[in-house]
Length: 422
Ligand SMILES: [Zn+2]
Image 1 (cartoon, rainbow, N blue to C red):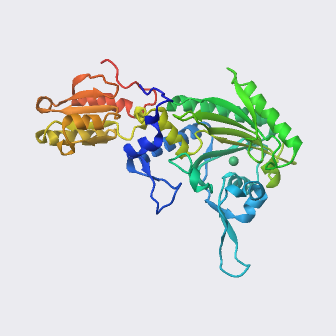
Image 2: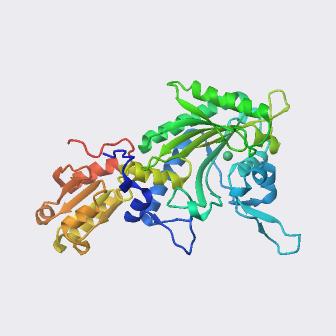
Image 3: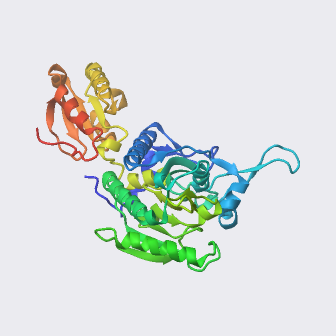
């Protein structure tokens, strides 16, 4: 079930995304700007809700911030100097010669969250303060590299910034890493490896050797002290421009590696935005920013989920959980009734009637749906359904009441088995 099959080109998310009607692109919307079809939107919605729930339970508070900001904001954050190649050109507002302001599609959420932090004064008693947002950001990728959900120009990022004292930074980063690992378990995905991404000596990084050493030492402490011990490799040239980061790497069916989740400890942006908190001594102190993303971007996360599961999503994530198949037109009303009752119980159910082809063809078309309920004459008379499971098992005729009971109990349960003996 849900076997990870990294070598299978049939699991390419672009191919499955189209076949399963999850997402697509249109040249008129533009390359690298995919849209989500209803079934893809369901997966995304359930995933986003999972992330929000997980964050709420871990003490994060959610904020919203705009996807635009003034050019000046990114000059302060350092993006303008170190990241402008990946940014869309600024838009001039106001029309007038020289007096209009310039706004930019944001390349990251960090500067906005730093400003939200700065908008109120904070005592050390409030820290750590964890701001989370599933927010849009934009990357001006070249057309040649765009494709599917993995290389896009419009990104929905699962982001958070933890503002804390320097003493709290390691514990916060470690807790963020633990959250990532738990999410991977819940989602049925696997980290290929952990990477400590360091600057190396290219000129794209902010210069402050003491700051880099300090942040790197803390991240090493995070990795080395994480209980069961995390094996990792240090790699030069992969850091963020403002600091080192822990990257959780995944691989696609072709074996290509990419970063899904990250944890960063940042001394640079608190400096640039002149952030502070009032310490027990009544004086101003500089907080540390821990940047972290549990599932990275929603686009990349869904692409990876499609590939890791070959389109057979775990029940709680599946866009359609139950498909009801009347054998002939005479059973269609019964089938419709079962769909209605399932939906009333919170099960995502769909009808696939004789208008959609022979029973065999309809069963094949629904092969990735966890539960199939076939209703023929005999089942209709007995108010039951012949149940087939995605993994090939056939529990046989099950009374409709019992079927709804069983599936209903599993529809939202992340740990549930597909089916259990009665
Ligand atoms: Zn950030």
